[in-house]
Length: 206
Image (tube, rainbow, N blue to C red; front, side, top):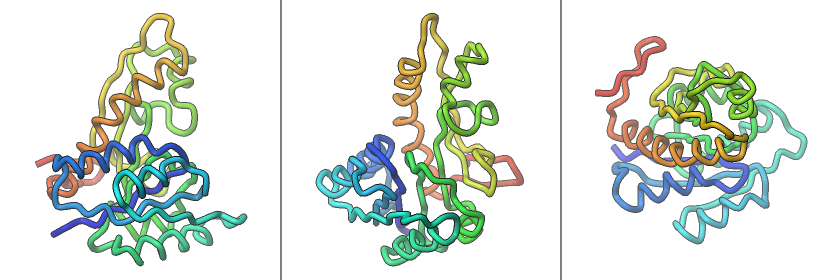
C-alpha cells in the first residue's frame, strides 16, 4: 500500500527537504509526498516543496486559534490530499506548535517527530542548550512517535553526537542537524515499508 505523506513545517524545512530528497532518489519507496503545510506563510520550506519537488504547499494560518480549533483545519487539508488515518503518515519537521490530543488520537501512531536530543533527556525547546548547560559528553537526535505529551512518544531511532570541547549552541546544533537529515528519512523509510512494530513503549524494527 502506498503511504500518503503530509509534512508540517514552520520555517526552512531542512528535514522536509531531506525526506523529500530521499523519496525522489528512490531511497524511500511506497510513499507519495502529498502535501506540505505551514502555519507561517513566509516559511522558506514552502517554496522548496513546491518548486524543487512539485509537492502541493499550503498555508494554514493560526489566526489566534489554539489546540484542536486550529488542528482540525490542518487535518482537513491533510485529508483533502489523501493523508488519512488509514493510509497516511504525518511528519513534523520544525513545526513550532504543540499538537492537540484530538489530532494525536485521530492519527494514532501515524505522526512522527524529530527532536535534537537523545530522549528522554532534554525534551522541549532549546534541547542543544539544555545539553550544553547540563555538561553531557554525548547528545544527539531522536525520531519518535508523537503522543499526547511533549517529546514523550515511543522512540523509533536515535543517533548519538559527541559534545566537543568549545562547542556553543550553534556549532552543536549544526552537527546534530547533519545527523537528523540521515535519521529522519530512515525512520520514514522503515515506516513506509511496514517494518515498525510498537509494543507498549518499545518500537521493534523488523
